[in-house]
Length: 384
Ligand SMILES: NC(=O)c1ccc[n+]([C@@H]2O[C@H](COP(=O)([O-])OP(=O)(O)OC[C@H]3O[C@@H](n4cnc5c(N)ncnc54)[C@H](O)[C@@H]3O)[C@@H](O)[C@H]2O)c1
Ligand SMILES: [Zn+2]
Image (cartoon, rainbow, N blue to C red; front, side, top):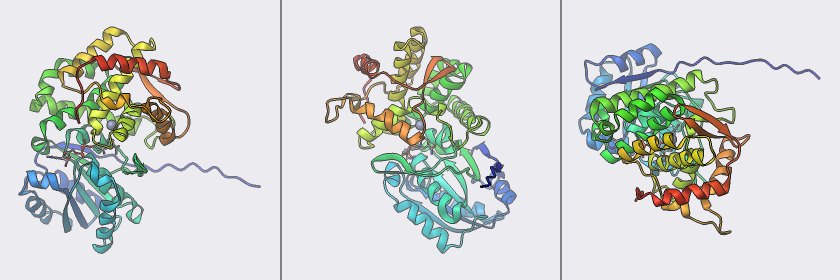
């Protein structure tokens, strides 16, 4: 018998850009990025809600690309939001168009939309020809400060989030702050939860900055919002590129603080609860758990509570109380589902202080129920 373990590493460049008005004729960013890649053809997927908010956008995109090195083959305006990743219709649409328009692996799919739309179109692009270049334009706060700069895509299946999907480094991510202006202010504000999350996990100074700017962030003050998004996006991108585990081969997932409960709450609500709202509740649960298990000082939890309250983040949801057929909290199954999705050993990140975290491999069901009882006393309820 002979065995050869040959190392294989594939270098990627993660291009993450920040700009305003990416499709104005005077903005060279996208033209340069497309020219660098050398591809000649492009397809555009534009989320319907974005097209409705920016009616001149399709023409702007067409004009912009006509003055670039690529030829626009077709532009598709399609519905987005969570329903677009509830089945494979949008993914199949992307496959059909890539096939019909002869988009090859050196061509581009440009995708403009919220996190859900990017996930579904991104999965289509990543699986056609085993990967067509994807240029993402995230258009929501959450997709700009977190998901859009990540290297994952996916759609929901078997009633579970992102069950089908792949790791795939986008060719480029262009965070155009201008798109944020048409967002629903509530959705925009909630999307900042991923910035709070990454600050708590990675950067005490960033958390202090959020604390000092919580009122400006709650009112979506332009400069505060843009700085917060950029700092959060760069932390996510840095973690992916420098953290040593871009495709999550290990068990630890530090960027998923609060997410074991969040994914389960989204599922228990039939996906009526948004990802951001579910993360806010899940994050607060894991902060409470960190205190009750003796890791985090109560004074630090009070600072976090004040930030969440000032920024109007939900800190309780009735689905936390839902019981399963055996009379157990239905939420608890989220721990095993989280483990299963990761593979390996259950690994949940808890906090020792803002900017200082630790992994645990077991969560005590009694402590979790105690936390939920305490959280219930808080009157900041999620309504949907
Ligand atoms: N791939 C990843 O690594 C990853 C990470 C975190 C979250 N996600 C996924 O991202 C999704 C959540 O993303 P989201 O918070 O952006 O929600 P979303 O995509 O559902 O968008 C929220 C709402 O805003 C609308 N919208 C989008 N852009 C707009 C704009 N500029 N103006 C007006 N309306 C606009 C959408 O139609 C939708 O109704 C979830 O499916 C979540 O699972 C993926
Ligand atoms: Zn998230």
